[in-house]
Image (cartoon, rainbow, N blue to C red):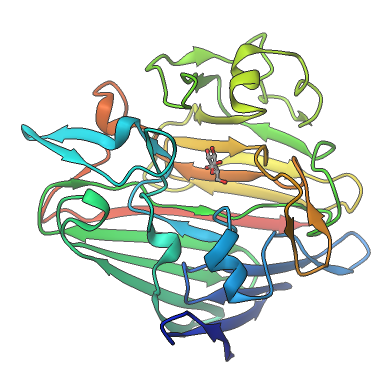
Length: 348
Ligand code: BGC
């Protein structure tokens, strides 16, 4: 079902699509491909929206920290917004101190996507497409991005990303949903239990750019190999946690890049009984503990979002890969097709 959600300042109509399958209900905007709401039942069968967001398009345009949005062309940071490819240096739009974050000032999260609904057997979904012009935000090549959101008859939310280019470029697409499994506006996620199948993470400099090191998580607050409450080690004063005001790092997934999506993360909320499992074929995941939510935004529940009221698990290649030849490559050349998949499974 499609309804008018609102209009941009220039009059562009923004629509909202509602999907419902296998016990999961989802609302998606043409603006930024934003997941505006995702509802699943708790252990008693009671539905709640478990993602942060807004009720009004103006709030998304004016003050959203990427709530629910598609991220491109490059998920996370590129140091100084600069990289060299085939001998040519590219200067990107810089929007985070001296660095480029999530595609620059007007990333894919602010693009108006072309959306078409589909039904395939027992699955329902949306095809989203956006063509980013050569040079947009400083990136070389016309990038044709296609993202498919599928709700399966099991209630899984699957994202398939695809992109092609007409000039050699870099690409790293992801989704920036803020999860709170107890429900949007219900307070902190510090009691949520998280498991990540990663023995290493990429430490960062003060600007949150990876130093290039793959550091072992063993014996550090970054060890989520056994499920633990997110809040347990958050206040240990680890220098990496101090610099980022919490967790805001890329975990190096033990499985590496895989042809098929493999399970990498389990998030469980003991209060509601809801569990989210994530599988991907990507080599990394950015776990961000909502450090910059500062009590200035109010969600559809009418409740304020404060630090740690949600978390993000962004499947991706590592941040700043274009400047780290030792990291898995994010280069895309003409004739190649970028393809990645992430699957979210819910139960209670
Ligand atoms: C980044 C954070 C950033 C957030 C946006 C995350 O992916 O790693 O540093 O603040 O997105 O709100």
